[in-house]
Length: 309
Image 1: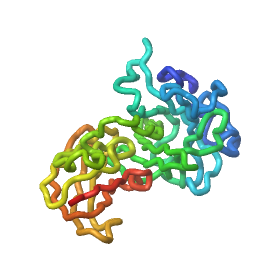
Image 2 (image 1 turned 30 degrees about the vertical axis):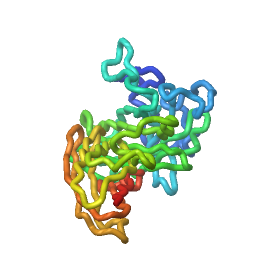
Image 3 (image 1 turned 90 degrees about the horizontal axis):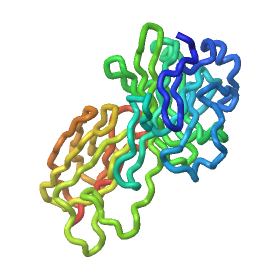
C-alpha cells in the first residue's frame, strides 16, 4: 500500500498513513513541531482558530521524542485533529446534533508503520498544536504510557498554555508492525447562556429550592459533566454515572484532596458505554471527586460536590 494512501477523508481534515519514510527519516528532519510539513501539517486557511466555528477547528498533532515537559524531535507527524463529519465516502464520520451549547469532540486517526511496543520502548509524547499557523504553541499533551487495557494503551492529554483543551489518545496494534493512534480532543466549553435553566447536576440559584436528590455525572473524554454540583446533606442521593467516552473512567470520592471532610470511600469503575448508579449520603461540606485512571485527573477529570444543609 502506498504510504500516502488516504485511509479516511473527512470534512475539515484528512486522516492518512502519515509518516515520512521511516522514524529515522522523521527524526533526521524534525527539529520541532513546525519543522515537518507533511499531509498532517498541510497549511489551512489563515483564520485565527479562536474565531472558527467548532466544526471547523483544525489542530496539527505529532508523536515526539521526550516528554511534555521537554519535547524533543518529531518521530512521526499525526493526522490533524478536527471535527468528524460524514461525507458520501466516509462511513466512520458523524453529524452535528443537539444544541449549539454542546461541546464537540475533535478526532484524529493515524496508522503508523511501527509496532506499539517500539513506541513504548523509549520516552515519547503526543502533542497537539494550536493551529496550522501556530503549531509550536501546544494546547494539549500527554506522555506515552499510562493504562493498558488488553492491547489498548490509553493516554491522558493534559491542558497546556491555558488552552482549556484536554483529551485522550488511544494506541492500538493494527496489522503486524503497525499501530493505530486515535486522538479525542475536547475544546473548552462555553459558558451557559444567561438565564438558562440549570441541569440536574448544577447547583440551583439562590431561592430556587432545595438541592436535587438525584444527579447525573457524565464521564466523557476527558472530563466530568458537570464538574460541580450540589446535593442535600444527610440525605440519600442517587448518582447516575454514565460513561459516554471511549476509555475506561472512574468516579472516586476518597480522602484524596479531601482533608476537611469525611472519607466517603467511593471508588467506582465505569467501562466505556456503560453506566453505574450509586447512593451518596454525606455530611455538609465540599467534596473533591476525580477519575483515578492514571493520567485522567492530571488531564482535568475532577470536580467538586457541594453537600449543603
